[in-house]
Image (cartoon, rainbow, N blue to C red; front, side, top):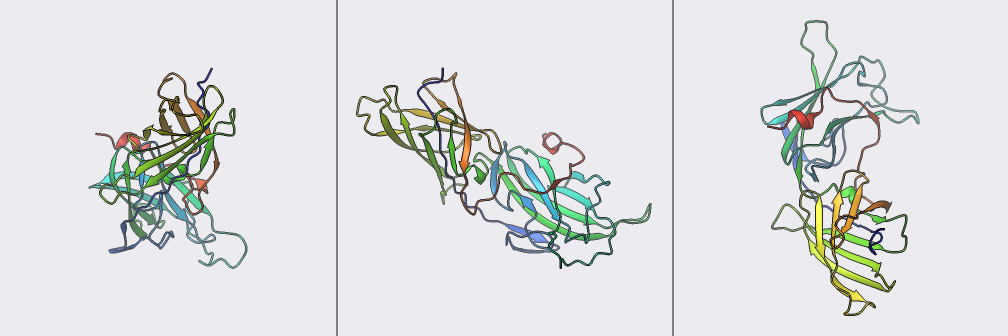
Length: 284
C-alpha cells in the first residue's frame, strides 16, 4: 500500500530573458517565430532540465516556403553552436494567408541535452541543382540553458487520481543572486488518522529533483512530525512524489490545470525528426 501521502498540486512560475541573433544582428526575444527572434521550444534563453526535450520550430507561412519532408534535417555541432539545417521546397504560394487555413507548424526535436548553455542556430536553405551550393533563405540564432529546474510547464495543479482532495502547491521564486530559482512548497494532506494538516517548505531543484522539509501547520497538532517530500520531474506531464519516510513508495501525479501564459511542455505541430539523437552526439 502507499503511505498516507496522497496527491500533489503544483504551481510554478519561471522568469527568463536572453538575446539572440537574427542574421548578423542581435535583438530582444519578442516570442514570435520565423523571420522573428524566437524559433526554440522552450523559448529562447529559458532554462530547463536534462529531462526536457528541446525542439526547433518552423512555420511555413500558409504554404510559402514549406519544409520539404523528404529532406531530413541536418543537426550538427559547428564550433560552439548546434546548427540545424532545414530545406524548403519550391512553392508558388503567396507568402500571405488570406484564407482561414492557418500556417503549418513544424517541430524538429533535438532531444534531451546534458547540462550546459547551448547557442542553437537555425538555417533554412532553398533547393538547388545537384552539386550546387544551396542558398540560405534565413539564419537565426537563439539559446537555451540546461540546468536543474524543470521546464516552466510543470506549473499548475497536480493530484493523485486515486486520492483526490489533497495535494501540494509549488511555486518557483526567481533569485537575483543565482540562475536557479528557489521553490516554495505548500502541502495539504491528511495523516494516518485522516486529520487534515498543511506544511510549507523552501528548497531548490537538483537534477530535476526537489527535496523539501515542511514546517507543520493545520489541525493535526504538534504530535505530527515534519514531513519530508521529494518531487521527481520525469519530463513533459510526468511528475512523481515520494514521502522520504517511505522511500520505496512513490505517487504518480496527474496535472489538473496549468498557469495562464506559461509555455506548454511540448509544442504543437507536425513532428519532423532530426537525423540522429542529439543528446548522444553532444556528450563528450
